[in-house]
Image (cartoon, rainbow, N blue to C red):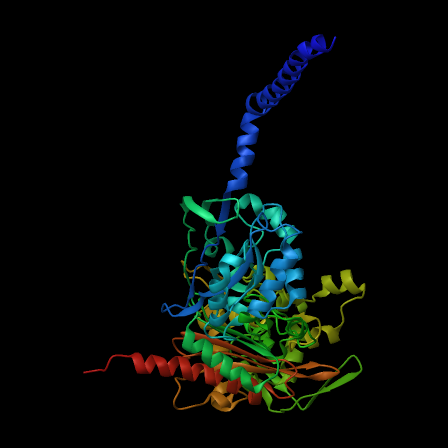
Length: 578
């Protein structure tokens, strides 16, 4: 019996071997034949890594090719999430913290915030110093999954200069990524947030590239399988003039809040556009601190472009009223109106700072006599006043490229008052509108457009920041009527409220001042004008928000600074006459 049992043992062993071998063959067949393609793809995913390379954003240049915005190199610390799982992360984090002097908690937070479904590398630290880069490279072999790489950041070499018109960039949000990923955006992308950076995002951004590399089990790169270079964005030449922009920024140093616009009245090309308070767009490269962000969103609103916001235009609006009075036919170019020290209507009396008796519109503009314009407004009524306002572009978009940031201002005409306030129009509404108060708001850029139309003989130009074929529309004003207005604006500089621009070092200038009430806050100061008076090449609008000073003492000197820069540079660059 013992020998029989021993004889059957090889049979059972054979059966076991056959079953085990069969199972192995079946498993291999299942892996190789049924799921071979899938498993090979998984194996490739384990050994092949995609390392994206962000594109260099196109530069912003002024009209002479001088750099306003560019990119700079920076060293950043990343981890490859495929190579560092949750178990391995604490040890790597602590080594990086000790080696580079970085906060462990901060590394945790940035790893958590940077997780993405695509498996792209996660930025842990930006702007590493040279000694940090050197220490990392010395210990790189002991830091699997971490890498220090060269990256590019947006750089504004002139800091705060032109910040509102140039704009800034910042990291893409999750909502934006969901919406834009089909257009080639990545989770670590940066996008234009304001100004030209936003308006011309598609032109400036370029196209991502990357390397496809093979790594071993330790995550070390074995070879580069392929590379697609990132395509840089396109440069963009603006109409801005760097020295004139610098002069506009200097001119605003005298006010806490305000704006300046300088524009070619013939083409609408914007030569300078400044707003105060301002900010340094470099704060967003890579990102402002919490305290910096709080300041940027404080009560002073430094991110707000005041050149595109509406304010009561005050006596600068008398340009509109003069044209309306003449175009309506109620007055003729040689008509006169009474200027008195006080004016009464509807049981209310209003003071005037001048009392000249019967005067024509040129002198009324030069001296800014309120009583003349009260009477003119009542005689012609509100309809011509608001018609001319719209013809000169008030209450509507200017056409500038920064359309998402631009206010339309406000023309509170009788229809608006009835619709919004459900109240009838009154004589008081007419006289307050005639001098640019009441429910009338105008942006500095809209005013530049209106003044340009007077300067160029009746063409409504489209302001623009990027060189292009000029767009302008003939308004149809009687040239004789415009000549009356131009004469009054010239007299305002010669002997009226804008005498601050009567400077022998400048070409003959013309313009109108304004001082707008804003109770209970201090008054606004305005100046809108142009030079040379006979053949204008530059319109300048200067605005001081709640400046506590008058248009002639605050805004006009600001405009003089801008004109001195422009025409001084023109003289310096003019060829000598033989």
